[in-house]
Structures are given as structure tokens and as C-alpha cells.
Length: 90
Length: 138
Image (tube, rainbow over all chains, first blue to last red; front, side, top):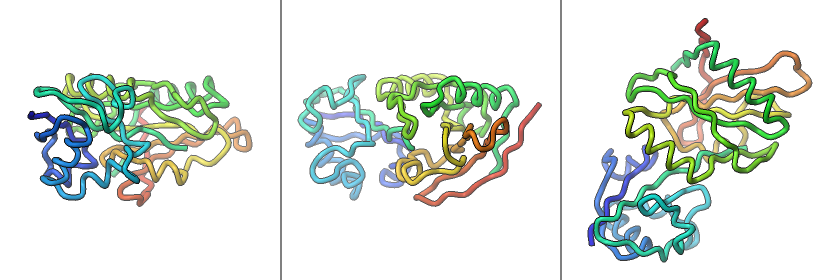
């Protein structure tokens, strides 16, 4: 189960500047664990108290994971995950 | 760093800020990857519809990144308005600043300074704010 994960600029220091990496897993949660085992520390930037951070957007293909069960979102071989920091402020 | 921006874009951003008052307005200017050139203005919808907060809708955000990737463009400027306060990044602006390569532009259309306005640009990297000069190209 290989998933392409697109990494935003702000997290590329974790991935040695790679824009796109590969991870394994059948759910978003498993993919994030696998990513963190390859790129230590990245999970902390995505999760807070075991849930997705409010101002990080993650998409499976073109769908916001908040509509797919968040961390429980299922992924299949060949799916693409995109991580984007929210553009937000006060 | 310095932000160079056309008069046309400055006027358009100020106009957007007035027309969306009292809500904050927001948007980006994109340009060719690596060129640091503010070339194409893209106003965005403030999905928070708030006078004290702005956020790009997550669907619009993905569409924006897909579009600029396809065009070999990147985000050069991220702008929003402050309608009642100074054009300086707020605590939340700093906390959520996620594009270390972007110029963060703040405009203020607050009443106390009307009819004058403020148009200022910053880098926000690792929660450190540095103001930078703005050169307006006529």
C-alpha cells in the first residue's frame, strides 16, 4: 500500500526538502505514523492530542479528510495525500 | 527582502478591503517559481466572514495550490486586511503563518486614519516577524 504524500514548504525541513514522499498505510492515521518513522517529528506538526491540528488541512486525492473520517480516512494503493497549512489569521 | 508590487494591485487590494468591510478580506498574489515576482492577483473568499479572522476555505486552498502547481507558479504574497487595527501581524497571524517564503501583506482601513490607509509587508518565519520595504511600481 504505497501512498504519495505531498509536503508543504513549511514541513520540507523534515523531508530533506523533498516536495513529495511515499508512505505506507491503509488509513490516514497509519500513513502519518509511517511518515513519522521515516521523517521523525513530522507527526507532531500534524497532530495535537491525538487529533488533526485545526490549521492543517489534509486531503486524500481531492477530498478534505474532515469529510472522510479525519484520521480514520481510508486510503488505497495509488492514492495521493496532500498536506497544506491553512491560510488563516486574525 | 523587499516587496515590489504594482500600483494596480495595491489599489485593488485596498478596494477589496473597503468592499468587504467590516469583514477582513484576503487573497494572494502568485508569480513564477523562484522569481519573487508578484504577478497575478487572486482575491480569495474569507470563509470565516469575520471582522477579526480570515481563513481560505480548505477547498479553495487546494484548488489554488493545484492551479499554481500546474502553472509553475508559487505564492509570492499573502494579504489580508485589518479593519479596526494597525497593519501589523496579530498573534494569530503569527501563529498560523505557514508560508515561510511569502511576503505577508497587511492593509488597514481603520477609521482613525481615513482617508489614509496602511499597506505594509512582513516576513513571518518561525514566529519571528520582520517588516520589509514596499516599493510600489507605477
